[in-house]
Length: 180
Image (cartoon, rainbow, N blue to C red; front, side):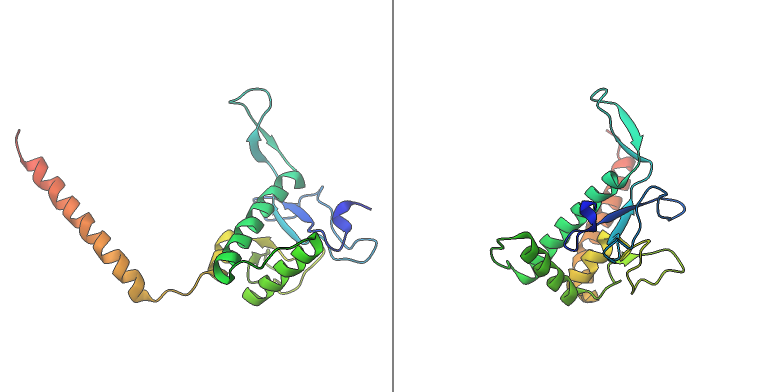
């Protein structure tokens, strides 16, 4: 049994950039216990990464070892956004409690399928044994947690900036016309 087969473990599959498909070496579910895995997928094929050969060397690698850090980073950003929206959830003393609290908070913020994408032909609302819940996107996570902004608020912020830009354009034209 691999560690990613555990109920309280997030299994991350690797997908290709184009076409958006599960990589041939990325495991698919169900597990022997009948769990639907992977939980999510992310790009993990032909990733340009630093090489140990020198400080300026790069190498192209593939695998779930490259897709998992991306998902971990998105999870950390998502957790931070949840804290900003709802405040601290207190001290959590064990991993299972932490996972349960985060899952509870996410379910309040976004129903399944709202934070991820899948290829055409796969239901975003249902976890499957190929793509799991899908590929999480940071932009969808931010939209789900960020408050809705009224257009007048945006206008109030943009108009002064546009005004400064116009002054800059006029000044540049005037300076070009001057002789020093």
